[in-house]
Image (cartoon, rainbow, N blue to C red; front, side):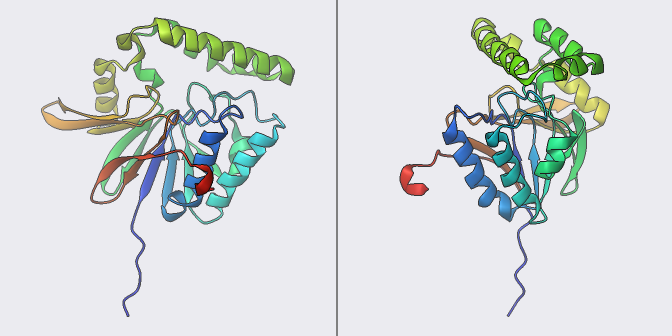
Length: 253
């Protein structure tokens, strides 16, 4: 009888925006961890796992449950890598250790079945959104983060909720061109990292974009969000497929 050899499989997700307000997304995510992810070798989470993050000291049972489910996956020997998003950039080493995740820099190159690939959240590519980029530059400073994390939890929670409401209003008023990536910056990042494949999230516009970069074929894959369905990029040595996962019904649970 031949030995069974598990299929090599890497999964990438982004923009789940987990929160207590959306138990349907949380249920789908936990099901994903227990099924598809448990059969993979590696899981990459490319930012905005949470709707917002107010600090690793948040005692929320919801946060603890998410950490517990992630840790169960990590305990199976599956590597979980995390790149910060624009909503959860304050997520720190304490939560990462508790959940079994490995934190990566905001721009990171990996070797994926023999190919060099650049992965990121994607917000740094939206350079036409000057207002956001100015805030991003300030909010990534250590002094700013120390100041925010020094505030009482209830104050941080109010700041996060206010910021979320402003973000929703701004998103409706800004054009598609402003909130999408800038092709020039896409090409600049790919040339700097010497790759022909870029994978990111953030824009909530899942697609595969093919173009020419320095005379060679290049590709940019955008991960989808989890607002109306789950979105997973499944990668094997032979192919890359963006797959959707429908929300669970009562009979599925």
